[in-house]
Image 1 (cartoon, rainbow, N blue to C red):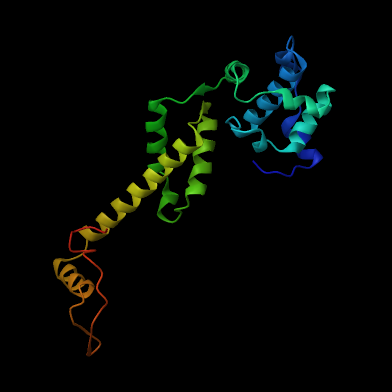
Image 2: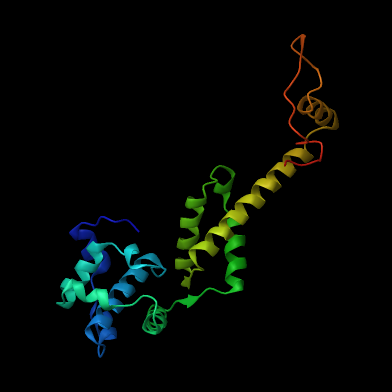
Length: 210
């Protein structure tokens, strides 16, 4: 999440509605504050913050103003205790989200593999952001950050391996033999002269890239 927000953006994205204010009813002050921040963060991001430092101070200040509370009250809200677990469940239920399952993992991987942009975009961060957006669109709370990153890297690695295998399968046997000779450092005819390439151990000899 970006760190800097102007007042128009805060008003548009982080204003508590009357129904959201009702969700906070009956809770002690620090719990109301924490739940409100968590709700608006999740509503925007589609995932929960891991640490308080993940939440921009401008958002915390804006929520404090709406609740008429001192911003320091947020310090009492624990992101690692039992209360946070109950609050997460409440937020999922209110926003009609659910936790991701192994079926969702398979669905996300299949979705990533089917994206046409894979042939020119190999950035992990790009596809990680796209994956979070996909989960949000499906009303699924994503896996942990580490799990999501491993999933994306796995898809990108598989795509690259499959692409190399496809390219190799379309190269003629004669060209493969010439490439093997070139990479092993054997003299090759090239533009009327003989030149020797630096050895690259077994890149094509094994039938696939290392």
